Image (spheres, rainbow, N blue to C red):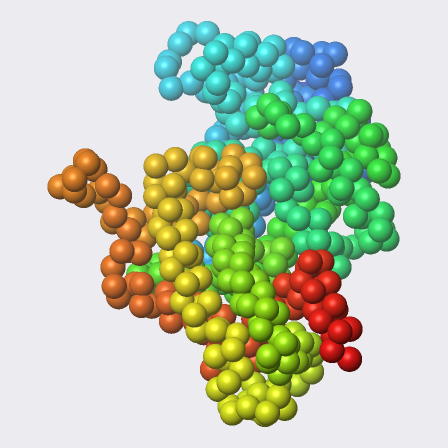
Length: 504
């Protein structure tokens, strides 16, 4: 451990680098060397100091050791997030971020905006007194270093640095200050591990994990974590000893969980950088194509898609599959008179999606069945399925837009499966941008208006979905998968098998 970080304070100032370092004001009789030279392990040292302060609540000096360390960690945590934002051209203000947390002036007595004749020593008695007063108004202890020390559980949390980082990243004041993508980064480690899919966590660990653990054990750990994660927990909840021991495999501390959390954050940040708009107005400039570009894409990891994207993808697939099923049943009915149609259907569903795409794939398949180039497209009615599906999906987008405005919390719960509105604020903002207000002149009172009623937007979204579902110059992968799934359905599979057996 760096002993200097326990004996010096970082104090806020209003010019870059926005802090100055001062020496701590320990009492002369306080045996500083006894503490700083005796222990080299930060985890053990922090726990030991908190335990001693609980036994000696009048000690200001013991808390100074922790306050010093906290001041350094606050700067490191804020600086880390600030650099990530600047690297991605986000307009984050480092001073504003630091002012929320770097409040401790390093004095032995607690400063107050109201001048009084009685000074209060910065000890554990003071922290307990303020905590009890603030319970009713649900405010943290001032300064924030006091809140961190009071809430630090030396029996289960690794060290004061880790706990400082957790409290900062979980603080709503910072989330509100930052860009929506900052909110994604600032979700607490425990909520992040709960709501990020296991498969994404494994991908993140493969890329960034440093602790030796098999992927099977990692999956088992995360799945057990998700299964026993409390449905309702208090703000700033973190796993206690009982929770950790009930994991599979059991954990003696939260060190591995926090390491996994860091990997996921790094992984998510890389994905965010890939998707980041070049400037703030890009969504408007591109007519909201950000949503369209984030919709179904075979090259995207499905586990990185939000619940909002998945809801739209699901709507596309369900509607297209329903229409494809109707067409397959029609073909089966006419199979005795037109056996070539069954042959074409089977050949189409068996196209190897892993094989290199060849030009005129559809035309060649039609010729194999003895027909002209456009025959197969007309047989399967792909343009009709596409147009009907698009109409349903645009209605779905219109409904989601209205839901995002009228009840954003329910909107998140419906599509993401939880009530973490802050985490998905950027998606809510995107849907909000589709909203055009209400029309009070319409019969029946106020009615919601969205861009999905405007012809130019309908045309743009239609073109996008047409290219995705039924491309002209590339493999029709979407429909190959859809028809293959329909043919695999038990009732349809049996009908085709029966027909083939009779006509052998």
